[in-house]
Image (cartoon, rainbow, N blue to C red; front, side):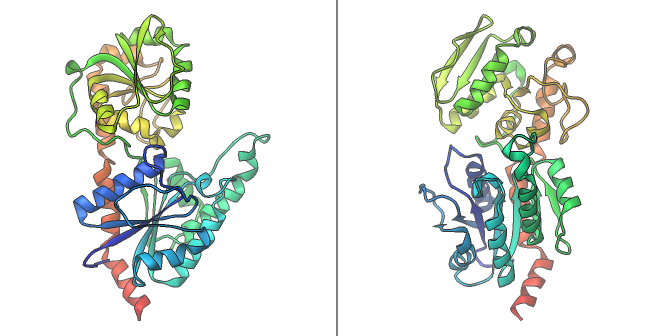
Length: 369
């Protein structure tokens, strides 16, 4: 696409800055697209009427009116759409069927190229859970969305493999793997551990931190092995311990993004309660890595997951002794390097390249004729 003022229409289920990971992701992406590539963004919000103050054109509408909203934002001309797919954001059962139907109308219109970032594919669970019974409906909707796309991007290798194996793609439509962004920005330079304090940071929403402190309450030996002086707790809520296994917990409350980023750059470790196989889709994990803060989790894992290795890019109770013996600086560097491969500029560059790809320009001209 070679417009004088290129525009990317981003489709989201809601816009709730600071309270929604997808929202924070798209806002950062919009900013980098504009600053680095001169590409503007507009938003179509399909499943929420809650307003927010952002410096972008925004249309709130029903999913059935997606095409009309895109045409309004592109002023009736050709354009490009990036839909952020998070099933439960668009439907209570996690199956974005209405979104898939709406995208089919956009594709049939012929005015728009379509990309999708698959934040999720489908839920899984035991037969007595709702996730189990909704999985097939969710996957059918995802397949239909994928069929409309000229570009697909996702955050985990397992997702990318599923899209490769289970979907019928348009000719030449690539699949790109980009783990999620840090929602508190990225440090320009990594602070060496020698210049940091012997602290562990825990941050996030109240529920996220409650899980983290429950896990830490059972990991006395692990905390002692890390040799930390105190734990920094960042976020809303007050029902958190003041001490943990004799270690002081300092509650900082809610901080702005710059203050959180500064705190991470001064902390040696960052703890999160997360399943290892999903680390690549955790914005908290991304935040730790993007500041060279060593991520710490409770559950060890073997082998490699999305380019991550326990004891190399992060620590668990199984690997802490060996990693400490060989030097923790290496872990900080490896976590930093892993994140650098998909930093915000890489995300924005992926879409900028797609928008300016000569093959897409040729296809658009064919549609016009």
